[in-house]
Length: 151
Image 1 (tube, rainbow, N blue to C red):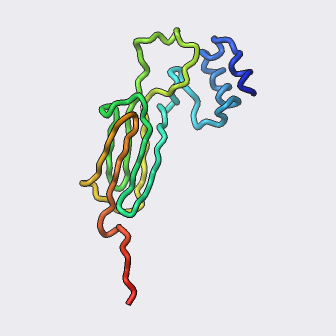
Image 2 (image 1 turned 30 degrees about the horizontal axis):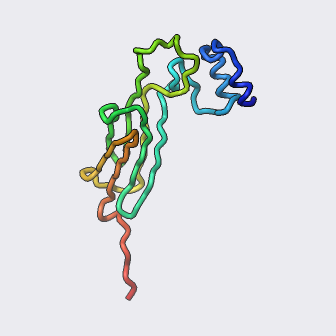
Image 3 (image 1 turned 90 degrees about the vertical axis):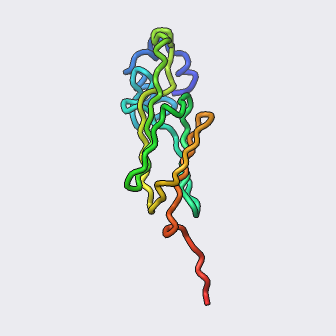
């Protein structure tokens, strides 16, 4: 299926969830983990992209959360599992019938990450700005690498 074919479908085609599912499967984004629901999210909500980086001092998680404010997101750290949860709501002020196509995802999300070593729960720092959430989880002193001098 080419892009030209995708752009020349009647508007009613995009409103029907069955045909949207086929479009996702055979179109530009094949084999998506879940199919879109009627509000443009997945059956389980949506899945924001998260980058995970490890330094000698900490683990850094950077999540893309466009359209959310910091009050829409919750962060927990329990038993070395960092969990990000939140929700992006569909704007109910706008009538769904006015849309020809809905591609942005809406709904609840949960992302959990098991950390491979002990971390310092009391020193976790989270910053949010311009749709980007950055969570820094420091390692404990005993798990930080240290250089050993050879005698």
